[in-house]
Image (cartoon, rainbow, N blue to C red; front, side):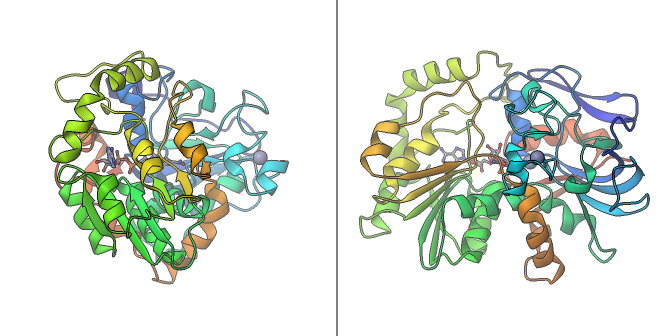
Length: 404
Ligand SMILES: NC(=O)c1ccc[n+]([C@@H]2O[C@H](COP(=O)([O-])OP(=O)(O)OC[C@H]3O[C@@H](n4cnc5c(N)ncnc54)[C@H](O)[C@@H]3O)[C@@H](O)[C@H]2O)c1
Ligand SMILES: [Zn+2]
Ligand SMILES: [Zn+2]
């Protein structure tokens, strides 16, 4: 079958690989009908989340049809249309039972203290082969697959695989509740769903920060107030817009590939920190492989959460859903400590939230399909990776057809 395979930093290819087979009694084999590219995939290829094993199939977002199930899987049969949860849990261990699926004690073959298991990710996450492929093996399928009604198109369902539950998880861990003033850093696909979810959880105002006008326009369409960090200093703007108090709740939906401002008043400030950012980047991502503007790591890996900590109201809550690798040790703990912040972070506990969000999409309350700006065949996926990597105007979220 065809699949997108990680060969090294800066080197992803479409290869012919063997089809997956059932390996454990709780496995299912799914024929993928729609996959997607995520900002997380970019970290891996850029090298800013290191330690990918060459040969791993990339991708962790998909919708498909069940082909085959192991004898331990009693709730799915061949032919069922399914959504695949990007984050994997066993559904039975003590952590899964408490809803902490991303910290399952069982599913990661590296043992009970190993990190979040998900598809197409660094060695320490399993690794499990990913979903930018014609077929995939789903471990603990009874927990990590969800039935889709025939009436729901792949396009409506695919955001439920990762970006919507991640954004929702961001609003939950940032403790967003009625009338809160919320800031969301990053208006990529995940940030868009963080904005939507903050409103769903009762936010009074949502202030959205990014440097790309087309992404900010989308945020505005959801009701957010836009702040372009290439035009104004985002910390000052957040204070100005909140009577000098700052937002109560802040969600970091940027992660390690944060960019620094290229123009405006924040650019000069960021330039003075250039040496610091360079040193941090070197320690966080010892191996990068930039090719012209392609696979270029974000230049200021600590900037988004530094702005978040600087702008947030005293005694506020910061929720970090942007991904940072274990090599990153540069959080501004001193400022955070002296503001009595609560800080929650992590990989989303997707199987906990997918059923509720799926119901919202089924009932028409939310139409997540609007985030998809491109549909590409697998044969063109590397070109699509490039546009998404460059954040080219109009390229917000790419859906991929693995069979064309
Ligand atoms: N925690 C989880 O479970 C989980 C799941 C999925 C994705 N993620 C992570 O969420 C993050 C966003 O994913 P995405 O798919 O939306 O990626 P993306 O790269 O499309 O989005 C990142 C956005 O942040 C903006 N940005 C860059 N520097 C910034 C800065 N200094 N301040 C404010 N905004 C800035 C970019 O312009 C871009 O729009 C990534 O780190 C991804 O790995 C986490
Ligand atoms: Zn994703
Ligand atoms: Zn578990």
